[in-house]
Image (cartoon, rainbow, N blue to C red; front, side, top):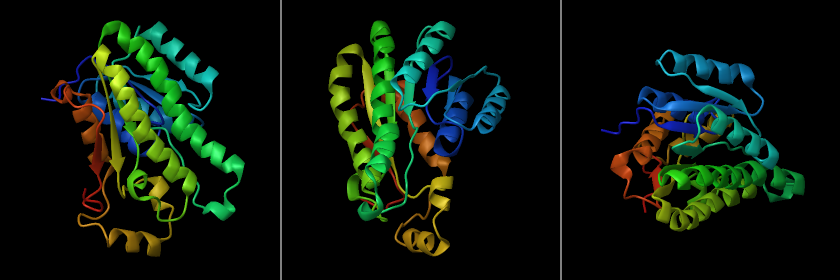
Length: 249
């Protein structure tokens, strides 16, 4: 069950955190993985070495997903090496903890560029490959903030994550004719560097409102593996909430 042997997958932003765990978990399920990073080559190579120990040979690609030319070059390289991809996980994302009064337009554009533009640019390239083979899976890593906003006022982050869900639903309608599914995962409080940089008092207060407490990156990776599998072939345009019961809809 949830067999991914031989499937070719690109996980954006996979040098650390949730993306790292997704890349390694996919490799553990037999997938052939492309690790993407923007700046942290050393951390990306640690992920590559971990995947190699699982007996698959990964690609490692430096690419800023907010840059159209770099995204085009990344997919050209994948096409040259693999010919196509089966699965795209749009995981690359960032945030700046600030409210609207401290948010400059440059800050807004930076967050939207990575979180939204990157999702669009990578999905468009992936779709062009997938539709030729009449098969594919696209998974967007959104956030609980898409449903209820952020707890710290970061309007750019909340808007970008809600945008990913709207984008995914709309893309799912176009993709269905090519037997491509498009789904979103909305993590809640998950133990990543992005979360753990917050003050301990703030974390403790947030965690106290979550029935199952703070989640693990492996919880998100497991959901991604399911959505990428053949068993999830009749699921599209959906958002899977992985939030420990913080939000129950």
